[in-house]
Image 1 (cartoon, helix red, strand yellow):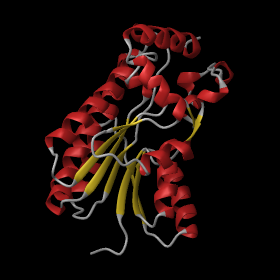
Image 2 (cartoon, helix red, strand yellow):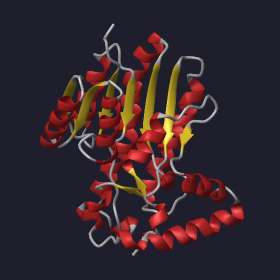
Image 3 (spheres, rainbow, N blue to C red):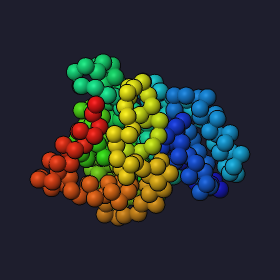
Image 4 (spheres, rainbow, N blue to C red):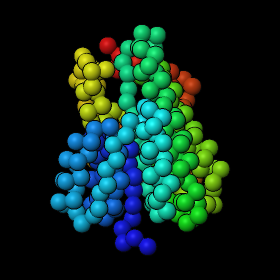
Length: 261
């Protein structure tokens, strides 16, 4: 048996993925880090291994491509002792659905839906055989409250329902699943060309979470009955309010006004 637990994180080169790597390294996990940007992964690996007595493997892959998904799935299947899979890779688009290039929609479905399903499918057999393991699917509050781009919210909603349904399907297996649903988080997410002109100042300060807070709440989330993890008291409250048919309407309207130009 390995001395350290092992975690694989997709989209690990920045944002929440990078933060998952840092916090898991601090907990003594060996890591397999995957993302498109190998140079960023190498930089993060050097930082982690200089600070913690762990082993880090990097695997550059683009999950918007079938070959990228197949590469990571094969690596997962070759590992009999994977303790944690974090399906974190993802991206957003800005603008009206019909004006966004169809290739970007296809890529989003590939990364958020296909990669999540196929990598989870690759990890489950060994986890169930060992009767232990954890899978965290990084979704979004947008999957609970449709206030952002049409396909982003839709694919994140899929991730949530997929996680809930699968947890029920494998109950009693010893494997736990989590759908992580953060709200606005300070990362590089809004620094991409897709969000040129996006003004963080339009979003009230109390709605911003730090990546450290999101990841800490995710890793410390323990519930035998609930699958959805919503970091931050403010978002837990928003989640409750949004489920009411009357107050939910106002949450969606306010969200639309805050987020869109």
